[in-house]
Image 1 (cartoon, rainbow, N blue to C red):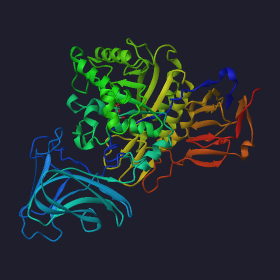
Image 2 (cartoon, rainbow, N blue to C red; image 1 turned 90 degrees about the horizontal axis):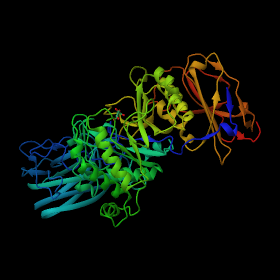
Image 3 (cartoon, rainbow, N blue to C red; image 1 turned 180 degrees about the horizontal axis):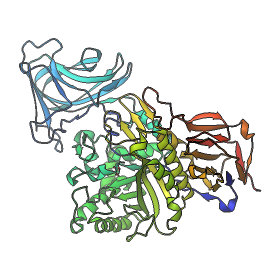
Image 4 (cartoon, helix red, strand yellow; image 1 turned 60 degrees about the vertical axis):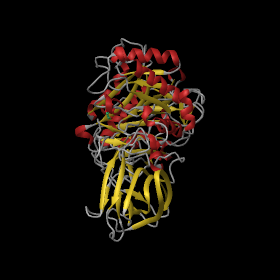
Length: 610
Ligand code: AHR
């Protein structure tokens, strides 16, 4: 294996090469990175027509002791449904009657931690409400307090801190009373006091994102942006402002309700917290099943311009002032937008695209625009800065696709491989085999990073209780998380963004199942060589480098290895690190089915002479 690090062949990889695609899929956001513990906090999930289904809320008590129904008496104009609870019993059962919310498959309540409860209440009579965190059957009490409500015929905001006196991973929030009368509830929220930077995100999931060293964050979808029907598509305007006032919406592609606590503003905040460039994928007037005629697209274009003013406008602009009021007077640096998702073949795509493109170019000349049409093998028929490229395929095909961009035109828009993954038969629920093919594919993207500007795996997250898409990079439940081999594989590539690429040639009878890439850094002595053995035989390689010299004895150095004796091996909650990168003594025989990154930082250095 030869690395040619001579200056004439060295090329800078774009700063943006590896990033993250975050989609609200598999409960990645609601019940995922967004730390809100109450599901359906505003009772809106059952729809605007009352009575409505209050799921997953449930009732404590029977028909003779309590009557619970929704009505439309909320004080919030965009989410009018509220819950009316009528207590019928004079002698209520011990513990009272009321309602409870199990969160997203159980709330993770941890000993000693503080949880902030907010709820809106209306009660013409004086009542005492007991709010508690309990085990899923109510038998174990983890935190409890009594809140007197002294006859409020107007909606009143109540706030209470609850400190847990025990740990239970599948807890629930319950609100009970012993007193006959009527109480209304709306917008009941329970957030852990401790979230990432205080911004509402689950810290342990954010640290897994940070370990990928993401240079961009593409959000919020995917198909989530489109909707099966336009009426269910993500609407940024409905997802900003005070959380209590957000209507929430049913994501009909992935089939679940989101209260939209994780809204457009929070995505921008997340980008900032990750140090990643935000890439706003907006709906272009096209869903899976309906489309806005280009002749009628103008209000949608205006809506997107408003979203950009919200992100980038000064604090005294119309929409910038809304952002500032939410706590971020400084603009968010949105430099990339994607005009729709996977819509290239749609009837009105090109017409709508051009309307968005022209309006954005005029208002924000520096914003780079991403087309949904693939230009990897033939030129686009419309202007674009980048084009989307999505690939989900089997491992052999993806391995061979490492050469895909070798043949792409060097003129015209750059490629954004915004979704790639091995799926179906040889993916398992995240197998080593899948990650090997993906790693080989990434070496091809590095090699072609003069035309490939960005790449991200998809999907990133799955809540183990709602896997609508398989496989995914990070698996979690209410309290645990682990990376699949595809996640660990990505951690071996994060440092490539902005590095110097050097060509690698492999001369071996096994070269059909090998892939490799080499990078160095301009201002440091770090260098990495990654070698992927996709085959089932061990391979011995002699490694030589032009323009690099070994600073330490290579054999005394360490390498990072991702491998296993079984290529279909997966991680799990009980064995989260079966497939994770590990340091090992450097060996020049490459195990079957392995990724080797060598050596560790600082063990090679650039040198002037060959
Ligand atoms: O990543 C899952 C889905 O795959 C995305 O929503 C969509 O863009 C693609 O079809």
